[in-house]
Length: 229
Image 1 (cartoon, rainbow, N blue to C red):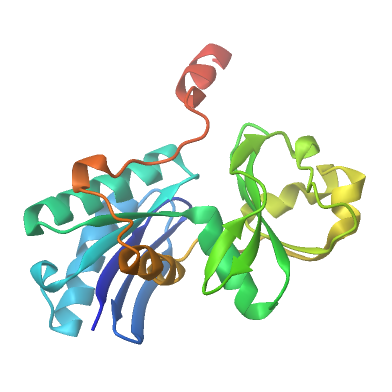
Image 2: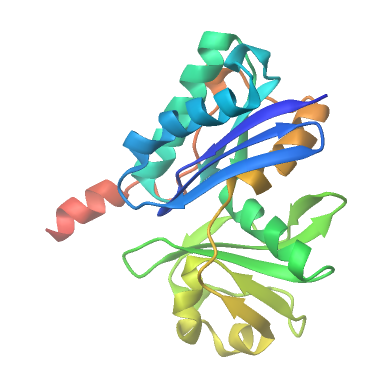
């Protein structure tokens, strides 16, 4: 029986999820700027309720981004620390893929535009489709102005999901016309990351704690903010 713990703090949401075989438990909260205080107590509570220790897990997964710089660092550090102490492998999971996976459950067979608000009038985005039980990226993960969200699949309908959907009216006209359904109140969930992490673990695509790295996409954000001040 596969046992995986997943952590995500890449957005305003903070979530922890635990997989035991076919059963998945999740603690999901919208708690902006409180992730540092909430994450580890949430982990401890979930493991205690399941009667498990960190050492009894097979792997630890985390939302590796893109998303909030500070948030990604919190989940990355927690996953690395827990895995290092228990000698476990780590599975970094794309936040955009996690959003897409949840959308596939509602709209099977659809292509999904996963898009997160990157602040500074930019968005993190990718176009995804289902591949088996997982997610295939049809467009690479990228950060851009909303006006540059080009689907690259002219005429094919998509479902748009994520906090970046609030910029929908700034997307190119062709992108707007291709979007059949849109929802902006969608966040990455640790429970969806578990499902993707299980695929990676079964395939042996895992990392040592020190090798598991976040994905920021926009490495110079801190310097840009400082320059703008």
